[in-house]
Image: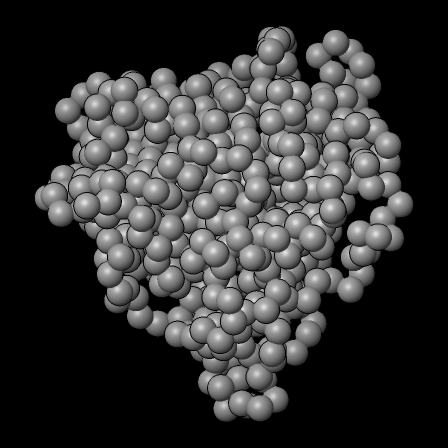
Length: 542
């Protein structure tokens, strides 16, 4: 029998650990086709299930809002970003709605102990003063939304060495709070804090829910020297070669169908042969890969702690990314008020992608750019922000040895709104219609517990997307999608998941039927045309 105990009777109420990566592409981990060493995530894959068609919400805080609540981002109040939210538009307020409940609240009501470590980014805008110090008392806090314990950052990004808005509970800690943190690296700290919180939460008789929300590998390109040194291969021949190699690897691993061609890349992206600074470009990708090495190490701390405490068999651990690889280019002011202006030693921080400047250290603040993001999202189209497959496809792993057979690969289409429904299912909880006297938005997600065990999913209905006017709907094997301002495109996902053969003109009846479904959903979810929404949003970076 393969590793695991799929035939055993599963515990009625497992512990649940939900781990989220930030801005990580579909083929950025080993068990999905990457050359980056990720032994701990690969261990999860061997011991549990991989999902090849898990979808996210295309952007960090909208995805995390939907993940935590089991409803679409607009229904949860974060139809765009927390920093840009406006009270004038309920679906775009930028913080979790009172009409949505979190997994922590629902499981807490069912007797679970709850905790969170890492990036919150769903509590609304955190104002930053002229001195660069954020007012962390002015936004919604995780402990206001069901988490009994919290250590992490309230804002969405920042330095890995001196993260802004870091708090322990409600107490500010770190450099921005006047406390120098020597030898601090955020990804490692999240791993360490997650391990200690598991020890605390598991001390009682109750099961626990822990949400581990990473920033890695989101920009800036900050990585430890030893992790950069651990990345020794894969990038020499450039981004096109890497994109092709990952496609072949993912096919060989059973993640992708060989009949799906590698999608065309953005015609504005340069060929590797035309890249003028190849050594610097390779170094950017190496640092990005090193961030994933650190992320994997943090996951390993969680897995090792569960095993050391003897509770790994009865714990459901899930891992996913909140959106596809990120093509954003940072200029000199990239990062806005969350970018520190000086290192801990007082040296200036150089903002933006400065050609020739070695990334990775505290004095830099770079991103890896669209060409490498295309490789991260291999073999799909587009990136974070867009709802073509490159923006919304996430590697998803689930390990629960007492209940999930080892080595399952599920090709069932699911969405991160289904995580709440699955937690409710396995945790013996009840999703409320009213909580604290407040009517709650009905649950949109559906449990994928059957798919975890390698069985056909009984998920019914369509899956929907909208972000910045980019929109899509998937129904069965059909997907209708458009970038903002472009006409609808139609694809057969079973034959062409890489979106190379647009069927819209050949099947207008399907376009009409599915676009009507999308319009009905948009009305129900509070989605508004982006040209209406965008002028009303607050300007965080100005």
